[in-house]
Image (cartoon, rainbow, N blue to C red; front, side, top):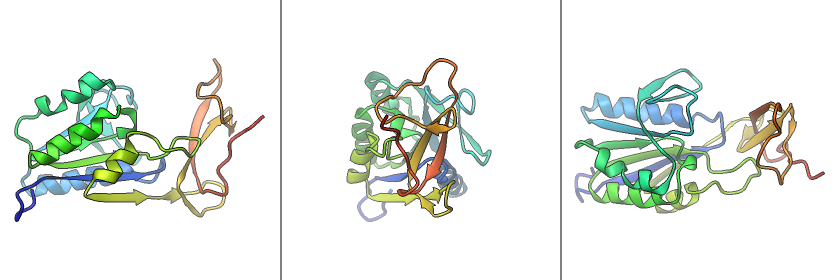
Length: 195
């Protein structure tokens, strides 16, 4: 809570995949805990890479989290799941619906520090909602970069690969049996198949 205004705020940590968004979120949560602040963390049910009730980073760090379904009704219930925590963390915000922005605004208006992380672009390079709205209304925004796996320059894009080849621009799904993976790429090395 800001000491003068007694108000909360929203922080957004964003960037492409592999840029350290969740690691930065976890760093901020550890610092809040050291400061004696109680923390509540939330993660979407769709992201089960680190097991149930846990948010984690590629570096192997984890934090206990409440799993929330990625539908409007479940997101709107987040404030009711709190028990006086001053710091609220929401990971992988890009998997939540637009109602997340309103929830973050409500939590900040209630005097809480809200720390949100998520990628701001789809594999096509388009805005990944609700991150643009969260970035526009947040008090603090930090956009991180990864390293381009092709040229080594700072990466800001999510490169989707299907069987090792760049994904087709018009196909959001993969064929049965195909292997999907992602890399961080810079603007110049980011590719979308048009054929």
